[in-house]
Length: 196
Length: 196
DNA sequence: AATGAAAGCGGACCGCAGTCCGTTTTGATC
DNA sequence: GATCAAAACGGACTGCGGTCCGCTTTCATT
Image (cartoon, rainbow over all chains, first blue to last red):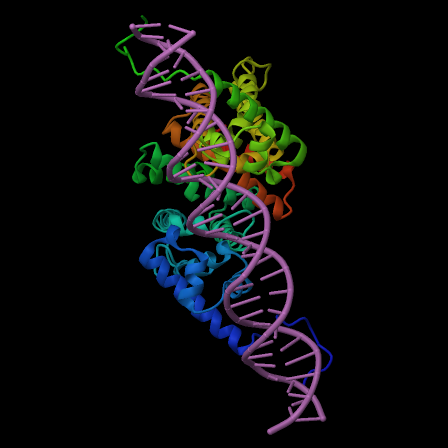
């Protein structure tokens, strides 16, 4: 007998077939996104390539958005890792200001590169975007603190991060503003906020 | 005989029935949005209430997004008017810094109030959001110039406006940050950028 | 190994945005 | 007022995201 009365609300284990299917779906989605491009990947296609029913997709990943978020996390996780423990200046070791600028540049380029996927994974109040935003705010706030910035650091972090949003970046690109100029503008903003 | 050879590429006149239908559609959409809320308004419903075919809706307004943009413009236009020629501090007459802060607060509150409609009207590269953003950037840039701010004023304007975006605001509200604190944080940002 | 209930499965089905194309309306010209 | 091409119309149709529910699989227990 193991654990008759549930001790805590454990996150519910996953049945063998469920785990197998989640892997198959994720692999299929990843492959399809890579070969056809995000916008041409339908849920029916993913289901049939993965060899499961459509219902299974939605039970595992909630929505198309959720599935795309899972695909995106594959690369997002390693980006976060390189921020936390990669080589400087993005990772630890460089002075805070250099790290902050490197962080912004890296985030901006990543957003541009994975733009389509990020947009597909980021709808209203998606769990994924909350987590991603939370990580970024945490990191920027930490760097601002090291830079001895005073004030509401959470709000300042959000303000600093807002112009890096893909939608904002793409709007500027549509107005023929080159990426380098956007980057320079952001650097300027950061310096003004930090007060350097 | 009037104008046999077209002198310039005039924006093409509109046939009587076309104009009539556009009005009917817009009226129906406005009414439905008001009574049912944006998210419950389908294109089929608008079409049947307006007494036209579905095809007509899409020919006139391109997409659901476009229709919602048209509905939104009803109120957006008068907001822009109050910025350009309304009473201070939002309108002309107050010192630039006061106007800038008033502008931000007003924009923020408006975004929150019309959040659902704005989101429905604002998709990837919508013509509407380009125009709206353009107006805001123009205005902020103008105020920054009056404040003797130096640098890439367009980029700084975009950076100042980015945190006012509905998606950004709503993210913060989900994290239980009250609107007043968001507002204060934005004021702080502006003062740092302006250098006051 | 037998059992039974909970978890998972899958595909028919639904609602909605957007397209297509044969028919109708408009208005400039004669 | 008759003519006619261009413009507009409308609703059947398509494709996709998402739901529903009767059937199957899993696995803890005996």
